Image (cartoon, rainbow, N blue to C red; front, side, top):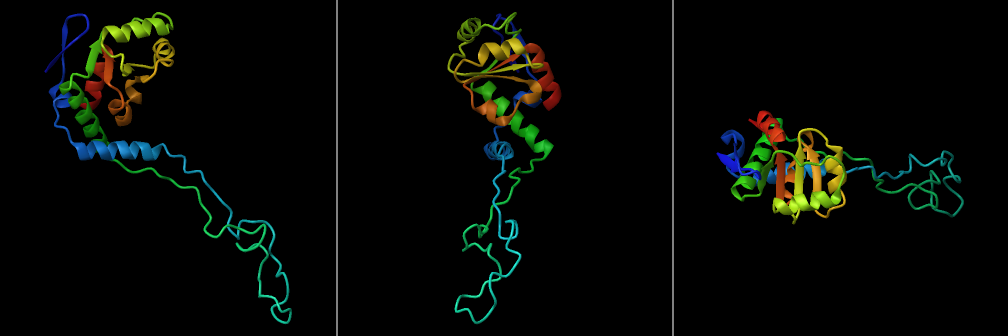
Length: 201
């Protein structure tokens, strides 16, 4: 399979990576797992055993006319603990490496079929420039939102694109299913493309 580059030439795509069938359920599972892994899960409250104090029985068991009480830190008491106290949670879901890569192949293949996958030599950002990046995105018809993929983290590309709405930059190692499906187009450099094919083939 071939895809046209912005300079008029074309580049070969590995069919093992870019000609896979679209597996909607697998892609959905990978996206949900990625989002779940990003949840902090740091909510915490104190139960009656966590609240300080309350070790002594407030009053004797019988003879006072009041309800019996064993601690002054029960949920019904002022300064008492919470009935069903929240605990820190791990929301992450397990997705096998083989399944995760298959989901990425499925997404990339669908992007190619929908002509939303663009390959360029490089972004030509010698220095940070939002104006130059906007012009570049107009040239590749990715002005509605783009994911810019480079081989390694490129500071100039990141600084040039971070102020543009719906535009995000990423290295190959930072690719994830959510960012791939969240942008109108995915713009990849030729050297990053080689790394992707090496990774997912």
